[in-house]
Image 1: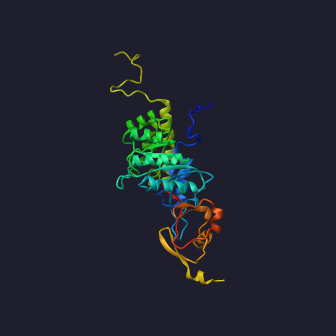
Image 2 (image 1 turned 180 degrees about the vertical axis):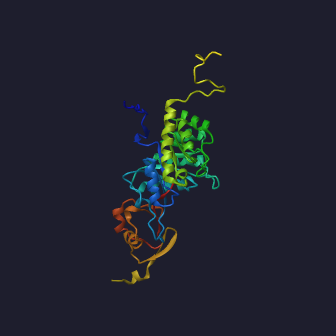
Image 3 (image 1 turned 30 degrees about the horizontal axis):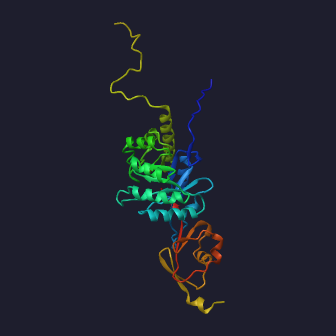
Length: 266
Length: 76
């Protein structure tokens, strides 16, 4: 007898008309080596990988450009505007990224505070409007605040990316209610970005019903990034499946799992 | 042949640092001098992106030009 596992049916993961194969998106920063980064990304099963735009180091002795290590025909390169503190800077970085010639997508980040790296929602909305008008597909990193998320969608974002917790904090999802509220109210895909520290965090995020999850440090800063990438992949799938399956209701009292009838006589 | 003008040179700002190159240096020549593959970078000249890479060879730089040479690096 063979054990037939039923095929899992899920809606395709589509952003702005493009279907993506994996609901786990990963960053490429903070790895101990490029070789480790490549192995971890491969293990994660991610299709979308984020990259940053930076000056070429003219005094370099090694090649630091990521395209020397990452095959751009194999992964969907999503350039970010990390490190930008104004809408103008973020727009400038986005335009430079597009000029690299891969695609017109950008992970828009406008940071509002150096210490917490929390996003500047007003500046992000402003930059989204400008970039969307220029034909960019803007995936906007933002707070777990519904109104900011609504404004970003209205400004033309093709996906809104609320944080689970601050960038690189590994604190997991601090406000599941806020994330669920954003997912319930937006038409465009909602991708939770930042704050995931370990596999259970990723699972809980996906259980909220969001479309996807983006992480970098949670994998890169693990003691064994390749193992953690495998764990994150499984957790993303598990969380998605659990969401689709629909969890049982929470109860304040115990309910027996075994029959109350058929007990032995005294 | 080294001309009088070429020996004088001109100063550019490249990624925030001053750099003296021979007068008449083209963008393509500058990238060659820096051992940079034009296909791997994006060039911003005086805050304007130079989109056409096949024009690098004919773009003669001027003294005082400011260039940003950027590429993709690891990031989240």
